[in-house]
Image 1 (cartoon, rainbow, N blue to C red):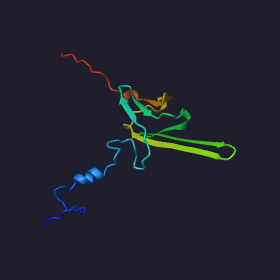
Image 2 (image 1 turned 135 degrees about the horizontal axis):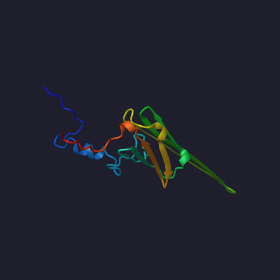
Image 3 (image 1 turned 90 degrees about the vertical axis):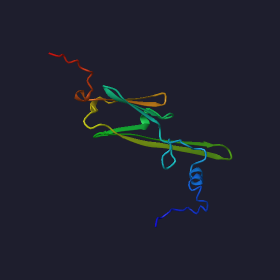
Image 4 (image 1 turned 30 degrees about the vertical axis):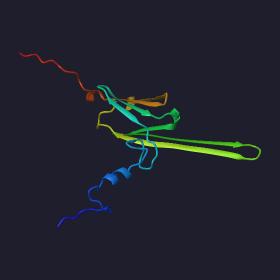
Length: 149
């Protein structure tokens, strides 16, 4: 005897066709920039060079004071929170608007590789740039030629 899962579909020839189609968001096929709470998460590029890790976070509309960057052991956490409020009073109405943006991204770096004292961060043109240098002993050395005796 075998167990077969049924979802109330009376046509077993089409078991997952309709489930797959109707289970997706109609206008958001393949867009992975949203968290499970449907809030946007900024895109991040991480590049490793022989001397450092270079991190770019796409966060337009922020200011450099909005970011909080911490390194706890080998866990790098980048977070931001920005809140805006505006109130406009006219003769017969008051308009209030507010917005709140926040995100947090964490990355685990290789253990005992990062030179914590030389980390550099700058924010320009909507991009947060981090340069995380490697310790001298962790840097990859170039190819060495060995002479045959």
